[in-house]
Amino acid sequence: MSTEVVDNLNNNENSLFDRIEERGTLFGHPKGLYLLFFTELWERFSYYGMRAILILYMTKLWIENGLNIPESSATLIYGFFTGFVYFTPILGGWVADKFLGQRNAITIGGITMFLGQLTLFSVNTHVGLAIGLILLIVGNGFFKPNISTLVGRLYKDGDNRKDSAFSIFYMGINMGALIAPFVVAILCNGWFATKGVDEQGKEIILSYGYKYGFLAAAIGMAIGQILFNLLSKKYLLEIGTKPSKESKLPKTETVNGTQQNIAKVPLTNIEKQRITVIFILTFFVIFFWAGFEQAGSSMTLYTDKYIDRTLFGTTISTELFQSVNPLFIVLLAPFFAWFWNSKYGSKLTTPVKMSLGMILLGIGFLFMLFATTGVITEGAGDHEVVRQKAALIWLVMTYFFHTIGELCLSPVGLSMITKLAPAKLASMLMGVWMLSTFVANIMGGFIAAFVEKLGAATIFGTIAIFVISLGLLMLLVTKRLSKMMHGVN
Image (cartoon, rainbow, N blue to C red):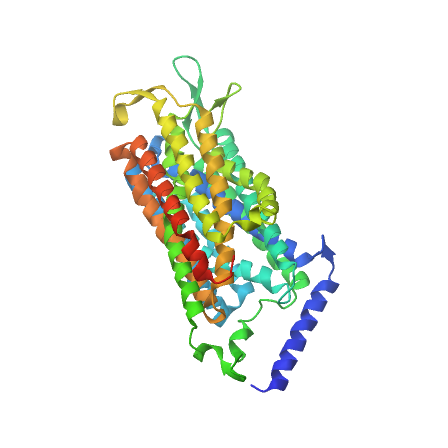
C-alpha cells in the first residue's frame, strides 16, 4: 500500500474525529461516549439482574417456582456459564474485526441476549435454562469486546482523555450492576411472590417470581439496544460500521534504520521477559477470580440460609447483596484513582498492587469463616433446622475487602497488559488475560460444589489461607518481576 493511500486514510480518520467533536461534548467528552455508557449500563443491568437470581432459581423447589437442581450441580452450571461468558468475547471480537464490524456485532449480541433472557422468562424448565444460558453466552461474546473497542475508537491515538473515558464507561458497568438486584428483588420477592404466614404469624414467601426477574433483564437489554440503534448513527457516525481497516494497513516499525513489517520482527529479550511477567501474573489471577466469583454461587447460597438478613426489623432479600460489591466500587473507585497517582501510591509497582489484591481477598474470606462460627443448626440435608444465623456484618466486611482487592488487581491488571504487551501481540495477550477469568469461573464452580460435602467453614477457610499464601508469594517475587518489566511500573 502506497504512502499516499496511507496518508489519505489517516486524513479521513482525523476528519472523522473532528466531525464527532462537532456533534458536541459533555463534560469534555464526545456525546457518543455517553451513548455507549448507557448501552453498557442496560446490558450490565440485564446480566447482573439475571445473575443475582440464577443460583436461587436453579436450587429452589418446584413449588417455590425454582428448578429443584441440587446445589452441587447448580454451582457447576453457574461456574461453566460465567466461565464461558468470558471465553466467547475472544471469538466475538475476532469475528467483528474480520467480518461484521463492531456496531453490527453489538446489535447481534444484544438481540441474542434479549432472546436468552426471554427464554428464561417463558420456558421455566431445565431445557429452557440450557437454551437461555447458551444464548446469553453467545450474545455476550458478540457484545462485550466490541462496545469497549468503540469507546477507544472515539479518540485519536495519544488523546489523554481516553483513560478518563474508560473510567466513565466503567461507572456505567457498576451502575447497572448496582441497580439490577434491587429491581429483581422487588419483582421476585415482592410483586410476583406468593406469601403466607408461619406458625408464629410471621410473613414468609411460599413461591418466588423469578421468571419476572428474567423478564426485567430482557426489558433492560431491549432498552439498551433501542437507544444504541436509534442514536449511534448520530453520535458515532461511521465508527464501527465496517470491519477494522487496521488489518489492511501495513504494520511497520523502524529497525536499524529501515522499515520492517512488525509481524516479521523477532521479539527482543526485553519483550520476552515482559511477556513472561504477563503469564506469571495471569496465573496468579486465576485463583483470585476463582475465589472472588464465589459471590454469585456459594456465598449467595450461604447468605440465603445462614446469614441473619434482618435489618431494622426488615428482612433483606438475598438478591440485594449482589449490589454490595458495585456499591463499594462506586464509592471507593475515586479514592483509588487518586491514591494510585499520589506520592505514596505511585511508588507501588503492579506486582505489589496485585499481590495486595490477593491478600485482601483472603482476608475477606476470613470474615466468612468467622460467620460460620456463629451458626447453630440441627439435623442435616433436607431436615436441617437453623437455630441461630450469623451476623450480617461478617458478610458486609467480606464484600468490603473483596472490593478493595478487586480495585487493587482488576484495573491494574488490564493496564499492565497494555503496557507490557508488544504491539503485534497485544490482542492475543489480552485474550490470555480474559481466558484466565474463563478458567477461574469454571474452577470456582467446582469449589462451590464441594461446600455441601466439606462444609462452608472448610471451603472458606481453605480459600482464605490459599490466596493469602499466594499473595505473600507474589510479594516475595515482586522485585524479580519488576526487574523483568524493564521500567514499566
